Each structure stands twice: as structure tokens, then as C-alpha cells.
Image 1 (cartoon, rainbow, N blue to C red):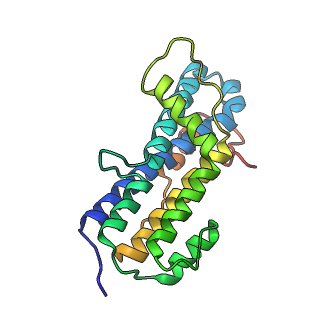
Image 2 (cartoon, rainbow, N blue to C red):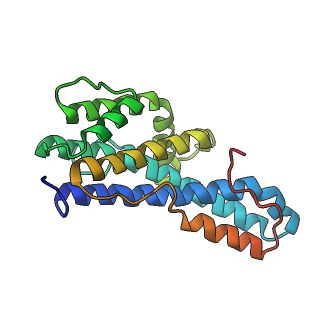
Image 3 (cartoon, helix red, strand yellow):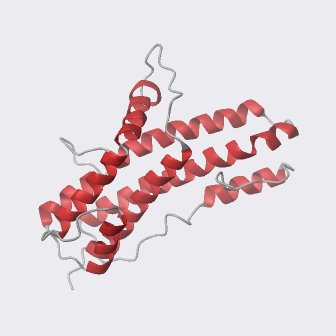
Length: 218
């Protein structure tokens, strides 16, 4: 069995995982502050600080999502597209065909295509096309607000938190798949490794914020 540990594809996938890990932490800051802001304000503990913290998290979320879903053209990227393009170039063997098929089925890709990496590419393209409008909104926010400062752009019409979560989950599932099905390593659990959320909840508890909620969907 040919594993690709320590090769460029492993390095690119690890770099993608780091982007996704940062996105997970920023999503937790953004949501945890947002759903507890009423209780925080009742305590009178730096309303402007918490608002600014949430705003900073949102800027980082926009930048990370753009990096994760950016199409590779000139520069070699650690994005999902960048990882797939490298897979296409080196055509490694599939170490876990069942996991690859499950991922493709889960996200509505072509399961009967003769080339598994081509099927993976089509699946990622399909997902990106599904959220084309939302991804364009994040890119617009990045270009006009987070990375630059265009006069007259308010940047208030970003996609919902639910969309942000779905974009994260697909990325985490993709990283997990590449780790197991191509590199041959056990991936980090990006969905449950959430140290910033735990730390922020502890801070709120120490500040005597009551009835702390930790899931925006509750």
C-alpha cells in the first residue's frame, strides 16, 4: 500500500486543515458571542469590546472561506481546488475506495465515473456551484471590506451562519477524505477540536454571565 505521508500532497492537505481549524475557531467566537450578547450586555461588561471581537471574527471568517474555496490559477494554493489539482497531477492510488465513494454520494457527485479523482473534482465543483452566490458574497466582502476598504461599501449582506457552517463541514469532510483515502493517515477531528469555544465559555462563566448558550441553532 503506497502512502503519501510527507509528500507535497500531504503538506497541502495539512495546510488546508490549518485553514479549516482557524475557520472553526472563528465561527465559534462569532456564534458564541452573538447568541449570548443579551446576557453579556446585562452584566455591563464591555459591550463595545464584544461587538468588536465578533466583527473581527467575521472578517477572519470571510478571509478563510475565500482561501478554502479559491480556484487555483497561477499560484499554487492550499485550497480545496489546489489539493484536487495536485491529486490530478500525481494520480495516487485510492487507499480507501469505500470512503471516497461515500463522500461523493453524500455530496451528489458522479459515483460511476471511471476516474475517481475526476469524480472528486466534479463533486467539489458541484458543491461550489451550489453555493456560488454565497461564495461570491464572501469574496466581495473580502475584496471590498476585509482586505481593502472601498468607499461606500457596507458589507452587511453576508450569508447566514448556517451557510458558513455548511461550507466548513464540507471542507472538513474533504480534508478527512484526502487524509484517509489518498495520504494514508488518520486525520485530525476538525469538527470537535474546539479549544477557543471552551476557553471563551470559561471566560463568560468567570464573568458571571448566566445561562450561557453554546449552539446558535438551539
